[in-house]
Image (cartoon, rainbow, N blue to C red; front, top):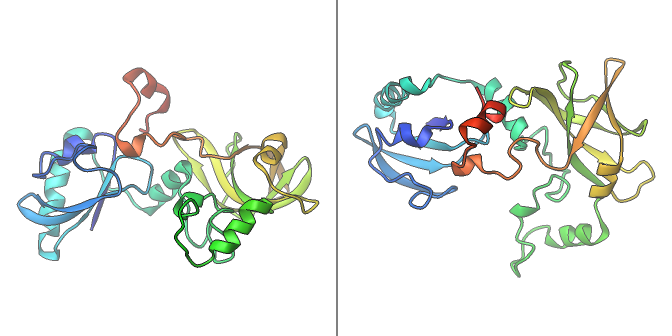
Length: 249
């Protein structure tokens, strides 16, 4: 398997793949078998980092050939290998959830900001539907929130979160966002008096995060501050002028 994600990926892959990779012909969250560098592979249009991306599932005997073809075609675009620390940083910047940290068995989809994954607007029954409907009607008693910290201090999760000086939760995960040039963390917060944690509760508070006895001012976000309109995974990128401020290096 090869995971490919970058701004000019469509242009790169089109050199070695015999299929039309346009948004119309190959929409996000679809897959198909294509020929890549003379080998049949399954291409999946997805992204784990918030960029235009495809995942290639390649027969074992063809892996080296397809990899070399991708690297050769990508040389002029500056393509290079990247590891999981890069994925961790880019994914937290985009707001993608990680199982075991952002998501645990005791978190509900509504609390985790993943209501779109549940068919609550349909008549389809599913495990836990009545609980979610009740939770939606009554309001959330806790919810996940994105925090950015302007000061350049490393954080790794478990840092205490304060709202107006009162502890309301702790970070589940934290990493540095190199595009927005800030430390980013995700944590679930509760109302200190047991009330509903509404969007207004989040917007109206002054937040801070404690790390090793030091308290740092934090900005709360209900959505990821990076590409909140989710354009880049669709291949919609800023103009060259806008890229001076927003493009990833």
